[in-house]
Length: 473
Ligand code: UDP
Image 1 (cartoon, rainbow, N blue to C red):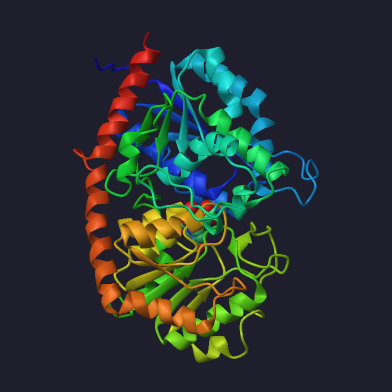
Image 2 (cartoon, rainbow, N blue to C red; image 1 turned 30 degrees about the horizontal axis):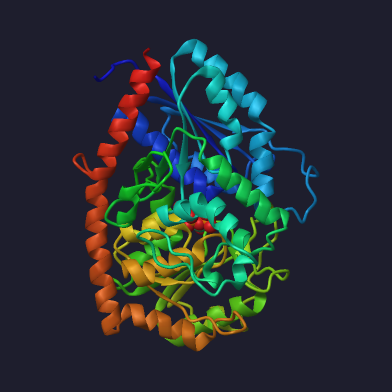
């Protein structure tokens, strides 16, 4: 039974660019391909919303309503509060407003569903009050979702800290997860609020009507089997990455695009650590020297280093922060003129990855960055920093075969020789040839998954029809 009305899906996204970008894409697909209307609520962490939010918002088609919800007061949490707590507060403090908006929207058009990210489960009662399906859109890989859903069981079985475990965690169909690859919320003391908060979020996740996961069958075949022992429907709908309408000229007009036009095919290394990935001063300088040593052309979307972290971590850029290049080794910019381009602002990443001159992506392994690289057939050097990125890096190298991991020293430092070596392994060596072939196959499969007859389109069509039917009752 297919219904014809145009009911509205309400999406609620926590303050994280890595979530917002696939949420916009999901909304775009629901509206343009599946006959639904969409309103996307973004729980902003700052007031006014960040420059990155504005950059994403500028590319959202008019048919999708995007609303930035007011941020909590800046002093609501101590400066040391972890990013997850900030994200949760931004969502939870807005729930009464979300309820009000949902009621107002429901008075105009039938509501089809409420879709939240992993932080948004406290909005469950809003969906229950309105009698609409409550779904989670999980913007990281299935492997992370599987770990998340298995966590309560692992927690009850294990004694001691997860970081001290000698046996890896084995999830069905996934690469074994070694202690040093665990996300930091599991690496933390089990008595800490970082861990207990994560565990309670994991327990909460099972209370949704279904989970959409930003992955596809050919990339993570294990997603097909769903969750053993849990009655939780799982739907692979990806890869949903940032597509920008052709009318947005900013990307094409960016200075780096004309520079790329002048470089030979497949010759440039693109380096970026996502929306908030930051290295230490020493590691930033060492990376610069490694790029120089490799003798490859490069584009580096660089961030000002952060001193308070021994290894890489997530630090949002502060609005209006003065940025200069004083942290780069002396003479680096002069010596690499013409060979390299260093950019300090938000880079048009998907346009860069889609340019034929790009040959390799040095990435922090954020899931969006990985999907964008795969969709453009670009092999990767994996340099994970935080969240589930170590797991993503292991999966990409060991199981999927589209990346090589840069070797990290015992001091968690990556030396310039290793930077150059990892780049060479992807760009030229026999290993590089294999990696390029594999990523090119996977690009074709990702395009197929999203085509009219593809697996992910098929899955989203079924969900959209279920929502439409439920809302017409
Ligand atoms: N991004 C971008 N320009 C930048 C940095 C990031 O367009 O200068 C985009 C990138 O294309 C991706 C997202 O921001 O879509 C980053 O998400 P990811 O999951 O890779 O990492 P996160 O920022 O969440 O750590």
